[in-house]
Image 1 (cartoon, helix red, strand yellow):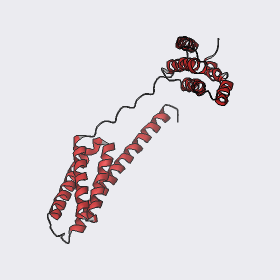
Image 2 (spheres, rainbow, N blue to C red; image 1 turned 90 degrees about the horizontal axis):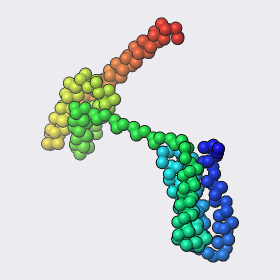
Image 3 (cartoon, rainbow, N blue to C red; image 1 turned 30 degrees about the horizontal axis):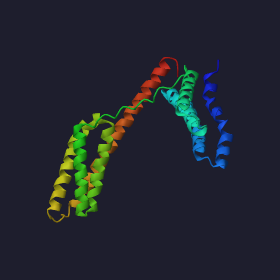
Image 4 (cartoon, rainbow, N blue to C red; image 1 turned 90 degrees about the vertical axis):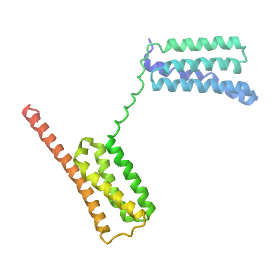
Length: 239
């Protein structure tokens, strides 16, 4: 009984008789016969690659490739009739199918499930932030961008931990609403007041402080988990 390992390496040896035939047809100028030999070499190489990959259904594809190779070589290379080529192709297909019967094939790779959709509140906040960015760029006021980007950073953090949205909802609503009002007035032609830069700096600082607070809470939660797991290991005699 030939092992599955060696059965995967038998296919390349089937092309050995075609190597001298390929050279002969090349120098003889027999283009159709040369094409048949080249395809008769390429298809078994493809079948070998399929069997090396070993996914579900690859053995069936390899058998079809070997059958096609035999039929093409017989029809083009040996100039046999279509009936003889068909019979030889069926024989190669059947032989390859029997050869690889019982060879274990790997299941197809599992498809990762799509990420869960963001909460509606977060999607709405992102939409408003994108609109703010476009309006701020249109106003040619670079000072508007830092607080907007800081709020966007908060949204990125909340996307990873949606359960924290309730803690930041009020501050986000205040910041986004305030930035929308400011950009709307500026777009209407209002002159920036003297206190605007300080207000924008405060909005940016508040958003950064919120991010720092959320990250600190996550760090504290991780420290608690590490302590709990360590205590349990020591209690059970593993530490």
